[in-house]
Amino acid sequence: MKKITLLFLAVLFTVGAVMAQNSDKKWAIGLGPGLDYNLDSEKTNFLGDLYFSRYLNPSFDLMLDTRVAFWNGDTDNGLELVNPLLNIRYKFSNGYIFKEGSAIQPYIFGGVGYLWDNQAEGVNFDGGLGFKFPIGANTSLFIAGSYVKGIEAERLAGKTPKAMETYTEDHVQLTSIIEFAFGAAKDSDGDGVKDKKDECPDTPAGVKVDEKGCPLDRDGDGVPDYKDDCPDEAGDAKFNGCPDRDGDGIPDKDDDCPDEPGLAKFNGCPDTDEDGVPDKIDQCPNTPKGCPVDAVGCPLDSDGDGVIDCEDKCPTEKGPASNNGCPDWAEISVSALLFDFDKSDLRPEGEAELDKLASQLNASKEYDIVIGGHTDSVGTEEYNMKLSERRAQAVVKYLLKKGVNNAYVGSNNYGETKPIVNNDTEENRQKNRRAEFEVAKIRK
Image 1 (tube, rainbow, N blue to C red):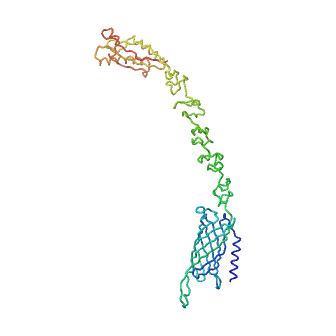
Image 2: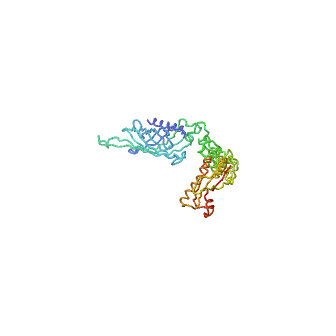
Image 3: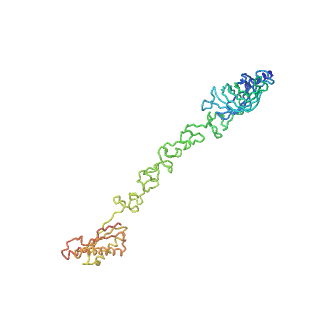
């Protein structure tokens, strides 16, 4: 049995020496010798350890660990225990606590197993602390100390026949393992950088990457070249990596005026006077707001009189600026119309005068006529006020009958309040019984 024990240990050392670890590979096998100390018997035994591990993430590995202790004494088979365990290994060198790839990498582990020893068998537990030492590109040395919880068993109590006692054989174990990783190193995105070193493991196929596996960003604006419409100019992510120098929300590549804030409807060019024509083609950039303009941004002057339409009160008729673009008005002379005492009927000579006036007005484009009615001082003021109104209206009605537009004709009545001479003689009172033209203007 001692020869078998020595042969097993030799195999462990030999295989362990040729096994290697690849930090990029997920699966690993570890083998190596160790020592087992039985806390009950206080004896130290030889230990062999074989495990398979699976990388889960930077912090955790899953291990299927089988340990065999060889009793250091005379027994029938030389075995102290056989203990397969399913352990979780937590690695402190995970990039959060210590840097990954450190020269010395501490870890803790623990799990549940099934223990066979010389007296009994059953479920047990273990836990421990270890250190990993990378010793080559593909090889790592693991040294660990663990506490193994044994199982309860019975044995004879002293020299008393048939007297039994219950006991538990707990163990302290020290192992030294050479680990070798196997399986193809994974490159999920196929960019040539293995996943373990790839800081951007989801890079789309065909995209050029740097040594860290991340897409190239030549201009350093945070937008990778394959998404960057302007890969050689630092820009803004919201414009697909293109700059917007004037900050108007229109990227320079689409901006016809990249150094002046402008409007999207004018491809980024401004329209200072808000006339609907961008400044770059506006020949009249200071047009008053609201004025209609032509294709080059100049105010319209429909009648060509030099007064722009938005300031021209007569935009379809030529007129001087002094008259707001309207033709000048001509004053016309109309004699006062006289009335008989206490009458509002027009005299024949008055009708003849109004016939001439109506012809003038109907031949013109626009006119402004206001007639005022008056009386002498005979009678009450109230009566005379109504009489003067009838006289003014008699003139208005006659003009309307002759085709004059009532929109341009008005009247006032004054009674006896505005005599042109004193009412001290009949001749003077006749002069005051009148209808006269306060306003008489005409525009051809």
